[in-house]
Length: 102
Image 1 (cartoon, one colour):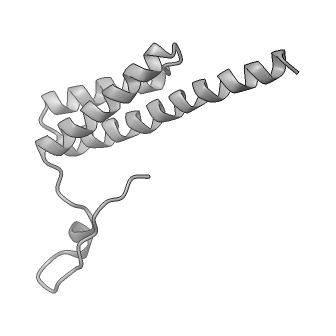
Image 2: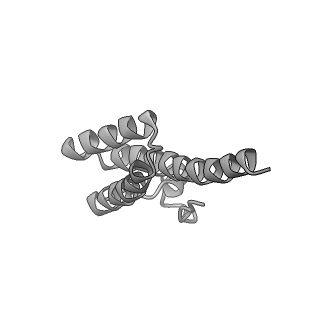
Image 3: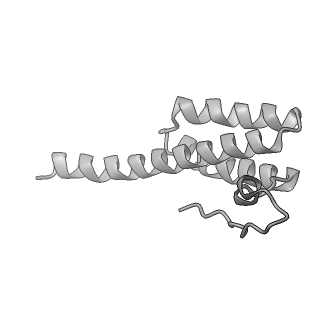
């Protein structure tokens, strides 16, 4: 589960801005690397999802444009999709065995 730090609003800060931490280049690149690592597992399992690839491309494009927030958002979405595709592949291996060997 993803958790984001939340900053307490002070009289000198905008409450809306305080709830959204600023995203750095390192944050965006780390999120992309994490998503790519899990996606590599999905590809190895031959169960990669097309939307994951699209979000990875969006993240890379946003990094090239130095839009760190958009890059991290796309990479985070790709990470979730990649994890779900790996989970689905593992589940299908079990389901297949149960359907064949019952």
